[in-house]
Image (cartoon, rainbow, N blue to C red):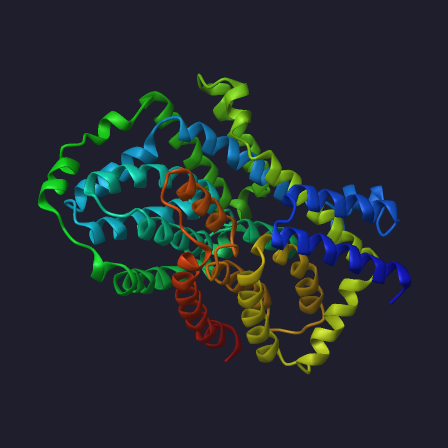
Length: 428
C-alpha cells in the first residue's frame, strides 16, 4: 500500500479508538477524522459527497431523518405510556409476566421504529410501573435493551447497522423480513426463557402493589387521540410502502421523508417541534464516519483487506461466513456496532463481488453478528448506552459489568443459534 494509504489507516484507527473509548464525543471524533482525511487528500469533495461507494450514504441519512421525525410526532401522543400500563395490567401485577410483555412490546416496536428510539420511549414508563410494583427497574431495563437489539435485527429500519448494510448491498425491506425476521422470532422465544433464568426466579409478587397497578387507567396516557390515529395511519402507509418496494420502486429514504412530510403538514404539530426530536448528532456522526471509510476505499485499503480475507479462508464460503459471523459478534461487543458495520460493509461488498460466499449469506452473517453481538457489553450497541444513561439519571445506576454479565450470555446463545441457521439455509 502507498504512504497515503498507511496514513489514512492511522487516522482512521485513531478516530475509531477515540469513538470506542469515548475520550471525546463520538461526533467530534468522526468529524475530526473526516476533516483530516479531506485535508491529506485521502479523499476529496467529489468522492466524499457524491460517490455511491466511497462517500456519504445519503439514503441512510435521510431514512433515519424521516423515521426520527415520524417517531417524534408519535411520541407526543402518549401511546408508549399507554402500552406500558396496558402490559402491567395484563400481567396482573406479576413482575415476570410484566417483563415478558414489555420485552415483546420493545422487540416489536424496535422492528418498526428503531432500537434507540424504542428504549428512549419505553424506559421512562418502566420506572413508573416498577415503582408501583416496588421492584427494581434495573432487570427490566437490561432486558428491554437486549430485546430492542434482537427485535431491531428483524427489519431494515430496526437497527442502524441494517440500514447501512441494506444501502450498501441493495437489499430491500422485504429481504430483511424474509431472511432475518424468521430467525429473530425464534431468538425472541429463546430470550424469554433466558429472562426467566437470569431474572425471573428472583422476582416476588406483592398483591397490594399489584392492586395499585390495576387501578391505573391506561386511556389517560393518551394525550392526543386525533394525532395518534393520524400518526398510526402515516406509519402504516410508510411500512406498506417499504414492503411494496419491488412494485413502487421508491427507496426507503424517499418513503420515510414523504411520510414525515405528510405527518408534519397534515397534523397540528409545529414544524419546529417535529424537527427538535431529530437526533442531529447521530446523523452528523454517520456522515463523518462515511467520509472516513470512503477514504479507506479511495486509497485501496478496503480492497487489500478483502483480498486478505479471501486468502485467510481459502475462498471457502462456509469458512468466510462463519468467520464473519463470529468476528462481527466479537468486535461489536468491544466497539459500537454502527462504526464496525460502516467499516466492514465495503469489505463484504468486495467479497460478495469476488464470488466468495453463497448468494447474499455474507450480508446476513454481518447483520446477525453485528446486531446480536452488540448485546454482549454495555458499549456494544447505541441502545445499551442510552439505557444506562436513562437508568443513571433516574437514580438506578446500572454498571458496565452488571449489564455485561447478562448481555454476554444472551449474545453468546443467540449467535450460536444463528450459526446452524445460516449453515442449513444457505451453505448446506
